[in-house]
Image (cartoon, rainbow, N blue to C red; front, side, top):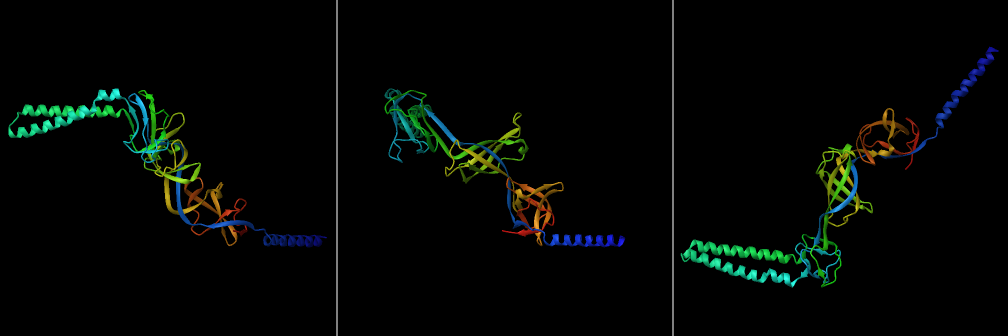
Length: 349
């Protein structure tokens, strides 16, 4: 009886061992995709959003009353209109006011300046020859100076009968007025913007305080045209947090020389705080966080090998690996979710 039991036990043991061997030999391989680890650059950046504004903007109002006359744009051959480019000093609107012009008497002041200048030059010549006294010379000099000031002041008064572009820019608002209608002082005439350069004010989280400084480079993108990336630079960064929002303000200058952005557009800004030009960089999405730390899988001899890694710079999509991987390692980028250390794998592309 005892001998029979021993024989049955031996048979069961042999059967059990044979089953394990079969399971190892017929284990199913997990399909995975791999990429060879390479050195490449990575940037760490802080993301902010906001509205861009023109660096130069002016709303011009009438300083004198008079009949409204919109000038012709020499570039188009027709009267100035919205979207037209203007140059600094270019007259856009003229007011006709005969009474004001007569009171200024600009032609008379110009003539007085010319005659007083001739008299002063004559007195200088005579003084050198002893023909006039020093007092007479100084009196003629004073008359010349007063005539010049009077004429310059007349030009200032005359300029108030014109609306002139204060800088190179583009007409962004031009209220309609009937030609020849009387305009009163203080009426809005035109708005001009120069948006070849823009500025962007952003709020950044408190954790970035002291980390973002003036001079840091910035990438600026509009959500409607994500393929057009503009360059910017941080010009100011507050050293203090807002007590309510726990954020701080920063200002960014944006180069918009090709006029890809327009004032009022909502944009995303990536402020670059650190960069490495050649380092191991992997996708963030393939990292598994375990008790032992951050892990990834590589493939060696047909099996998955678990690697614990130490990371450095990161951005929303990628992360730098400081320790745990080396160049040319076959990194599992798909199919890693269910892997265990030494799992048998089948590499597919």
